[in-house]
Image (cartoon, rainbow, N blue to C red; front, side, top):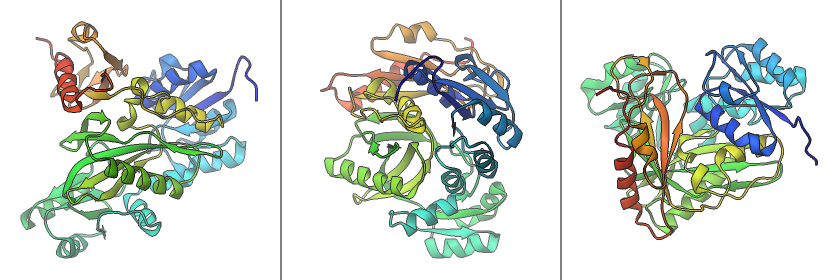
Length: 386
């Protein structure tokens, strides 16, 4: 294998922050990106060779993209897998991870069934296609429980907790479509593993602790603040999940550590994941570089952690959609060992992910102290003018 200029070209369906960070990682590898996204001048566009403007179900845009690149991938699960599959067959441009893996990830019920059939430990769940189904499921699983839309949910959207019988009908109406009910998991913490599959090798990044509020990821902590036995079990479950899915790339695997010391599967994203952003500063190979390597058939990089890290998401703190202006920027840049990542989104609204910071520490740093320091260091950032 050799490298010349211009080098290989990777097409990415989706041009949000994940595509942007993928482009940042691809450049040093001699790989250029072309993205397809419905939003003109999407966040990734400034760092890519070109952008095609088209929807996530626009087969003609996928075809045009495939004809211009050597490999295809995606950074969002809203992409039409059938259209991707047809384009792959017609153009011969390989798609990784595979469209079939994308189909599994798009449907939470199919995903749970697939993992359960493979022996991956999952919470108890029931299919819900009607209000009567929901009542029957609650009779079986009890209260509280979590009602989840089968398709389209992200960042907590599409997940509705049901605490009591008087909340059932409102919860069902809010989902407005096929769903599943999942038992409420009594967990000690949530953890995640970014798994990677190359041409003939698989690997996992170290287990990461994920801290959510209102179903939205706020911080990640690496190493996770748990026992070695739990870390090993989480890695084993993540490896089993990788065995189920097909295609090359990285996979964000979310897990529960239960209060009785078990690991349960939550869900998977067949792409780089928010829980793996820490790898940019904290690991020898970032998840984005690893995804590019894997999809284009290059050897995987070293996944070891270099230093303890805490990432903190920068979320929209405004009530109404507006142009994005970030205040407190210089204060954060002045902080020692704090790294700022700005996603380049032109508009901000409440709880929209606009960027993140990563605070790195020495090998012997107390993880809880690092979490608190990261939150404090990021606090000056706001989208509200004082």
